[in-house]
Length: 328
Image (cartoon, helix red, strand yellow):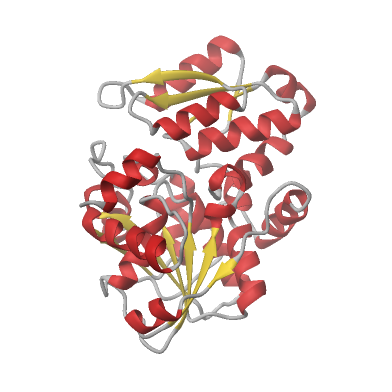
């Protein structure tokens, strides 16, 4: 099942919002490199351009959305502080954005979050509150705490200003490469692919947008196929950035409207993609960041003779965990 007829985004996010976010981010965010690999092109039969957000501040694209959203808070909201919930990358991004903007941050993180991400979030000055994701709802905990402490919630993906910030990833990629036949994006809560889809619709209207999830966390695939939001139990996957229970209401609406197709890959494929990045391209990519490349390597997507953009969403993985995965 595919959605072949893009229509206007059903939430209040436009390309103008993304262009505005790009200007806001220009002084603070890294304009990350676009990498190529002859070996990867040979494997896939395509001409592939990797947007390497593992070189973004905090090591992931999440800085874009967090900073854009927080920079647009009112003076009163900035004074009161911000709260969010995240398995790691949005946590770090919110903490760093808060440090740069002088806004106090409170972050709800799962107890089993990668140590690298937990330590970095604390190092940026955030007040970290841990919870058990198998027994507690982070959204319910966030709402309770925000009301108690009078904080403004900046969610990790289901927020117009967050989505607009993430859309700058595709803006930079397409400005570098020109029109592409296809753009492949990892999907957790859907903020990145939503922003990228809005951008692509403006700058490369014939570009197909494909979302990729881990097999164990394929709520987005299920939602896309069913045409309604599907919620699943907390998935058991090495792709911690995509271990969400469901897409957001805003992000699902955009995905349903603008995305061409959704696929999923097994965790073993993520390890193979991580190994390729490390051995052949000399870069460290976290499991979630390997989703889009893995879908190409596993031939989940018909890519031959196409010009394809692949978003590498981040590179935050504990050294011990990375070494362990490379031995599997």
